[in-house]
Length: 352
Ligand SMILES: O=C(O)CCC(=O)C(=O)O
Ligand SMILES: [Fe+2]
Image (cartoon, rainbow, N blue to C red; front, side):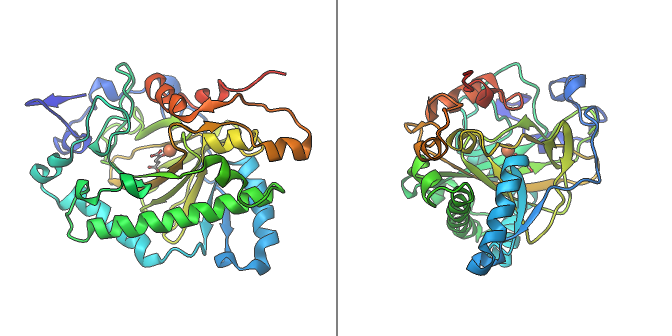
């Protein structure tokens, strides 16, 4: 990490310095650079209309969910019941922190660079020293359970920031629960099956800010990874840059202002015994416009043991394909070894 006067430098400050070339720590090796994987810029990830959870449409919704959760691990949802006003406020408020709040104020929230996933304003995701750096700054909020939620640790610029994040946290949690219920049912399981496997939901909200990058062909906004928890709900602005890996090709996630991107994460893959897959995804950069996304992660407690759901194994008389893991151990290994695509979840696969 670049350090100026003892303070870590945010990527946004680097970008504002008007460099022609990115510092070497941000340069990806040739095999992970965008453009080297045979992208299909015209393909799109699927979109599901949830019809505001109207039971009349539940068969269609479940059928679509089943197909997209097993083939893609990522899709967008519309008519999800979260007010449009809140999605727009969340994007606007998040952007205002990065664009309008003075750095002297922002630096009060710098997160601890030596501990993984600490709350606050940061740039570096991994604790590992030799990894290529992402062209991204972020603000991570610990939002659930309520015992972890302390809005005084969140910005109060703009003035409605804490209020917006609080409402957003609650709405995302309720949508995540509904989706996990539908996903369980779409596998022929009781609606609380996945929810029970997770037990208490831990939620983090990460606002990512990707400054314009002078060499987008050499960098990534966020390296390829699958999310570690159970389910991620993401909104983005109109710039675009999120991509999902499908059959060896990077597919763009088209920005839709009313949609929420659903990304299945590794614990769901384990709980569903691989019937549903976590999606490998990444963010690319561009030279012209800063990009903003807000990802809301839902995961189990660190002490929770995760394994393929007994109900699923019994219903299908199948063997577990993943070994049991204590979630906290999974998280530490992810942050110290790095994601490198899906290698952490793949490492739990059992060979029968
Ligand atoms: O910015 C994005 O679109 C992706 C963010 C993401 O994948 C993450 O924070 O895990
Ligand atoms: Fe992610």
